[in-house]
Image (cartoon, rainbow, N blue to C red):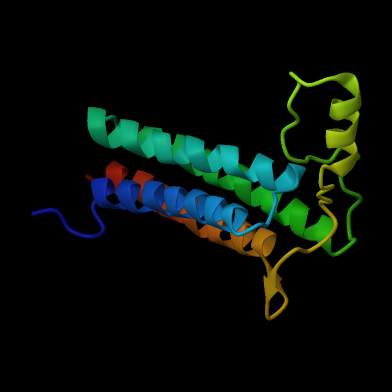
Length: 160
């Protein structure tokens, strides 16, 4: 019987955690909170961590592969801490911003109208918070916890 702290369970928890965070980001987006450039960058490592976990569990890969999941979680955590600093005006954010997709099959006049009407999502503005804690703050700390779970899985595999 597999315990909750076995290598496979820990990898499953960490991968599911990243999948949960990614799903949460899409739910917020569905409720009208358009992601900024840094928000989008934070999603890719979560996707990578979830896929890494699935591959590890499916193909029963060796324990050192958990370090790849840890690296992905640390990457999104670092971006989250940077984004938190940008939101708090501690760091200067990127100069580029993102907006909704533009339909390129329309006339030049309609395309210009779409561009002008597209919402500008700034990385240095906080669209949502609870008790002063933003989504970037939650991602930064939560991803650090997930990196710890990945590390725990790796260390567990070394003892087995």
